Image (cartoon, rainbow, N blue to C red; front, side, top):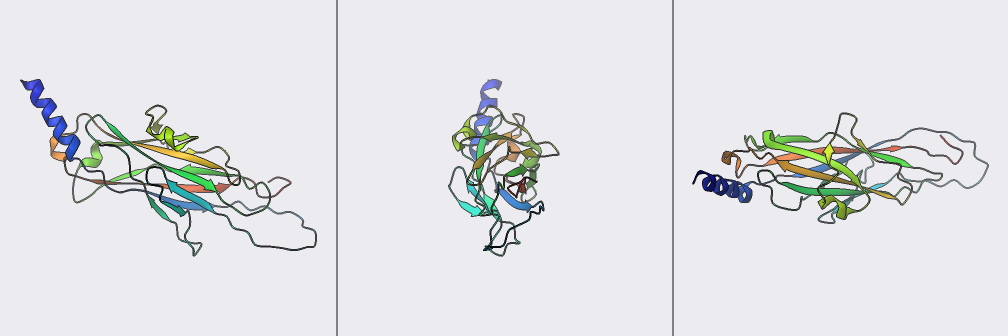
Length: 203
């Protein structure tokens, strides 16, 4: 009889726990390089990194039109969060720069911050893991996820018009009490794009 009551309580939490906003912010970190240029026509270029949410298709540039303000993209994890279960979300980052040369970039996802909303305690029982993927469909596969350390999760070089996918897994501790049902958290991480090489002859 005790086992049955425990299972019923877990089921109640599974349908009642609410996952709050899951946002990703972006910033740029440009390296400077110089090269001798022959006389000729000079045109302007842009350093654009596009972000697209995996589950909803919502998209934005990493920096807003003013070129200074970091964009915020809300990710909507797929699935129902319950004790001992996980939900998944992700973001596709595309190097849309129009600059000349190689202009490869590396994107870093910083350690996520989890904060309670409205005085709850749900954040205590939430863990966030991440992985890099070649395709958005890989985000829903539970294998390969790990905690993001202090250096962050760094992508391999992303060439112009190339993309990389950051997948995020949000898990609820199996020991989460029924008192957290209906509570919500915000989860936020920052993506930083760093130029690896910007001139044809190398950096």
